[in-house]
Length: 180
Image 1 (spheres, rainbow, N blue to C red):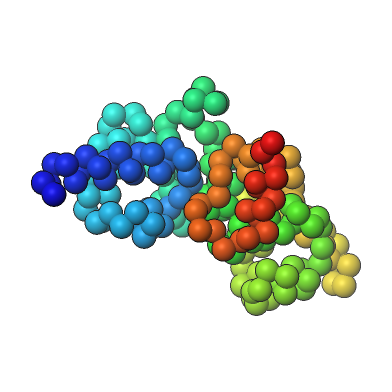
Image 2: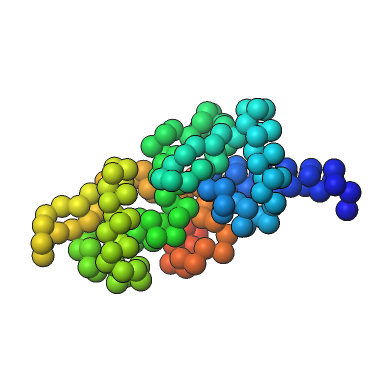
């Protein structure tokens, strides 16, 4: 395949992927699409110059977003960008989806329900709490974790689909049920 045709195909694939799955970090884009790092950087730089894509540092990751979302008529607002970036990471996504589907609960139950350690859960809960996405209430045996704004999570889940081959089967069934 000629190099120019290959670059064009990568550009189209990359732009389509970022528009469909905003908030995905660059390493995940590279892994999912199999685009060489230099080619990914080149196209993202070019898309940035053309006003098609913006890159934002979120939670230690460089994440890609479409510059304009037609349904919104502009860029994705910053709080939604941050939440989308978290929904694209496995453990934060599992936490947020569990809290969305099952409601508030004690951290110990949450750790076992999503299949992670208490230390890992604590680390991610601190990040989610600093981001204003979850709230921890009470102390000791009465401590509970809940979503700060379930409506925001619901709206973003409706507007932007999960990544393909997502291991959170329960979420995929739920997301499919949201669309008539």
